[in-house]
Image 1 (spheres, rainbow, N blue to C red):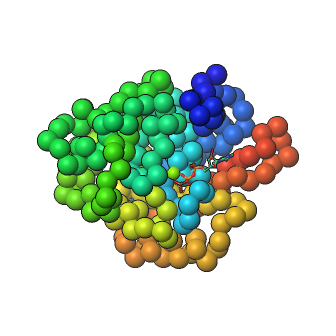
Image 2: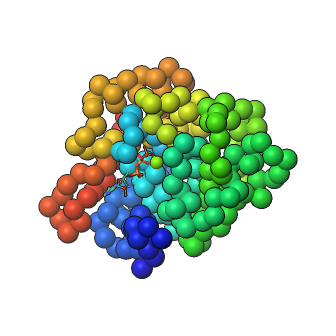
Length: 228
Ligand SMILES: Nc1ncnc2c1ncn2[C@@H]1O[C@H](COP(=O)(O)OP(=O)(O)OP(=O)(O)O)[C@@H](O)[C@H]1O
Ligand SMILES: [Mg+2]
């Protein structure tokens, strides 16, 4: 079983693909696929109202299930404040998105393959002083349009909506936004406020994931997916 340096198991979909939690992540993947009736949804942002609701864990596992189903998938860590994807996938974070945005280098220089076939990751890179500015830059828009040509699916890990504007800045650049909501701790007013801000920013909210639902089954924690 893959265990990273912090001895933490993030990737249940890779470590234990048969358990119910992995099946729940596959359900998110399937629902994403079926939400593409009228319009192809290639790039999807995962965000939430508040911190610690499970965005990074959810997006990493959904990315694994997408790659497992044969889709060429890119996961980009656009949380330039509290990045964790390099830890989840046990990758170097010396070079990443922030390097791509401020240095004269190519996408290929920061794209890293993972142990999962078909899944590449761009880690955050060094934490910058001006994350919102970088995420709203022309370079970011150009990078997004380049990734769309290279991959079947692009998944974007973003900071929470209420605390900082980063997800709002990114939202119009992606085809869709998924909101992760912590089942028992989320404040409904904050969730509604986050949804309002995203909608005002022209985000296409395609669904919400209710994270951390307790079930009676073998797997205690569970994920549920709802239409927004
Ligand atoms: N369904 C779950 N079952 C058990 N633990 C979970 C689950 N989802 C997330 N966690 C744990 O909760 C913590 C926060 O998760 P995560 O880092 O994915 O949240 P986040 O929304 O990305 O946080 P941040 O706002 O800091 O970016 C982590 O320790 C993670 O392992
Ligand atoms: Mg996170």
